[in-house]
Image 1: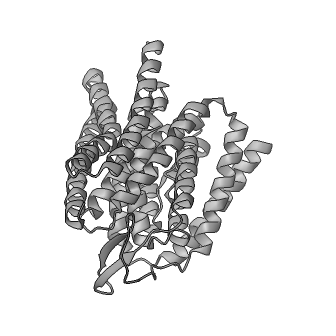
Image 2: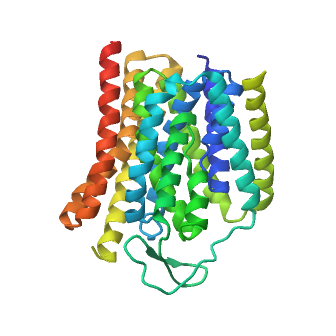
Length: 273
Length: 104
């Protein structure tokens, strides 16, 4: 492996991490196609390296938000039961999937993410009610409005199912899966967007940890590549957070939805062509 | 368990995650520099492996600390949930170690 590939992976990691934190999703959905389709690495290696960056992102983001009560530890712990089962199931079975099947799944998931991004262009946290949060609900202080936001969790079974699915997708494709469960938690389970995002960010680390040791044992975690990607993503997500305050995410979301649509087409073509 | 206890746990877990990600990033960065300089293959590989191990272990450690804290708070429902998550992680790690052993 040459130095230029390592340098390219650091840069790609930084771009993916930066976009990820600006858009509020992990960078994996950009990193995997770059490593796989861009650099020509095996999908298995791209997935394993990307999952390493998912863990790094999860730890870094969660240590940044901890203490603001945005992370719902109770809800997270419960949903992690489902998401880790999904991750482990993917880690065990994924070796049996052919490249064509993986390409089709990746194409479908990137298409779904692109659509989700477009439909959620204007999505903001609007939920505010003054109620007892219940066993799984939460309460946090919102700086913009200057008061406590209290929420109750509804339809836990839907949240559990979404987490199981997100865990399986995470282990199969090497992405965090937050983009798949945050909208569900927000729209169906009554969790405010910020709390859903912070809780999901905590969950994706342990979800990835339920599958990536299996890929490590299979020799798919290439150490220098993984190191380069992790360092790139950590730098990029830090920079993304720094710019996040001033940048308007709307045009960026549109642009990235377009990029994901192109990636989706590329993988459909790979599977069928 | 009170909001205050949960808030404390959140801060505690945040510190753990930060320590994990910083230590692992330091090992990975140093290992990568050594690897690129191709001066010291042994130490470079060791540092990269240690960095990746710490990275994978951090979320697992977070679950263990949560388990201990929920037990201290006597919140048995969450002790049970945490035990389940830990059980899944243990199954993953066991399968991975078995595979590594079979391969070597």
